[in-house]
Image 1 (cartoon, rainbow, N blue to C red):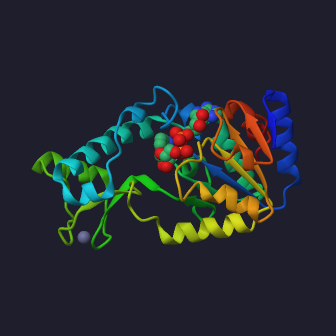
Image 2: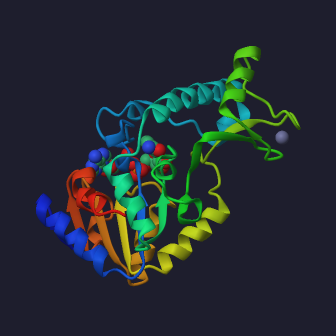
Length: 256
Ligand code: NAD
Ligand code: ZN
């Protein structure tokens, strides 16, 4: 494992690795979006670091938990709507457009990779996306505007217009099963790449955090780009320590 703390060296190394890659995958966590103004979980002071997660079973069983979940969703939506893609999002989108990066696997639910131009067929959202909601029984969609209107009008957590089932933001809560299709796509991407770049994740949330290791075991070069130490630094080929936007900036500048 080689750790690089110097910004110029980190930029040069990342540029060389990307230029030499046949098929690269980028894996992102909350740290990629902090420079867009969205706090992460595990940095000190992040608003969400002070909150207990709402588990899926509690959402199913308890109306108060559902209402709290919805209030957090609406609050988060304001944050997400106000945010715009940052340098790292743009650099990653550029690498996808130029064909170097074949897949972006993200734990983020903020929709900023789409908004930066990563097409759906190259984007794997492991934890869903907080910009829409759906019925847990029949799958029918509901917009957040409709969910908000329902909650305001009734005082209750929104119910499906079609079947009356519980509606939930289309994100994977703690204790909720991972989406099978996305997990399969991420596994295939991790298996088939020769360069795997994990950026802005503490790499502690499983099963998502299993993909960097899976790629490494399949022979890919593993690069971790993060400000703080991660759980998997020891397993990486290179750890680029610093601010993500600054390290990715030259790639954003050269993006098509
Ligand atoms: P995390 O909060 O556990 O780790 C984020 C990491 O990013 C930290 O190690 C921190 O050092 C690093 N970091 C933050 N800003 C950085 C910057 N500008 N430059 C370099 N490094 C920086 O995040 P995680 O591993 O993604 O796990 C959090 C879970 O919570 C995920 O499952 C995710 O779905 C969810 N989450 C999502 C969002 C979002 O969608 N933007 C935000 C918070 C949490
Ligand atoms: Zn329904």
